[in-house]
Image 1 (spheres, rainbow, N blue to C red):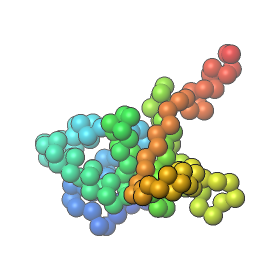
Image 2 (cartoon, one colour; image 1 turned 180 degrees about the vertical axis):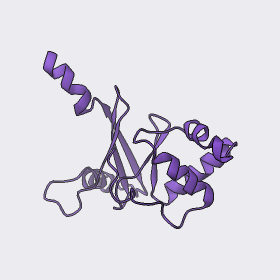
Image 3 (spheres, one colour; image 1 turned 60 degrees about the vertical axis):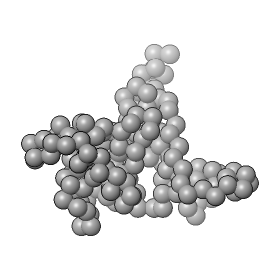
Image 4 (cartoon, rainbow, N blue to C red; image 1 turned 45 degrees about the horizontal axis):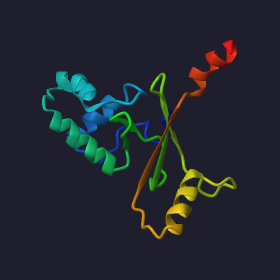
Length: 148
């Protein structure tokens, strides 16, 4: 998952534990479970899983990380745009996750605008949506195409 805007430095408005978890998440682009983060942070004195969960919750509320329900794991956000509809491509083979940015102002309709249109048509008042699309990423699909 490419991280653009959030990659440079740890945001200033984080608690001590949020900053530690955020820094630990920067070590890999792979989705991370709370217990993976706990293993990384044990050497820093973090012992309680609830410490990690609270920090992840705070980071999620601040729009810096996203929870992936299908993997029960977390990834860092890769952009600073609104997050009304979070959309992810999740590779079944390598577990790579790619966040699809909203195409605000683009000629091509975005996933977000399509979801919003369907929701409005049904008369539902959406507060947020998370779409996880599972399949095979381009890198994992290449060997199959070459031998296929």
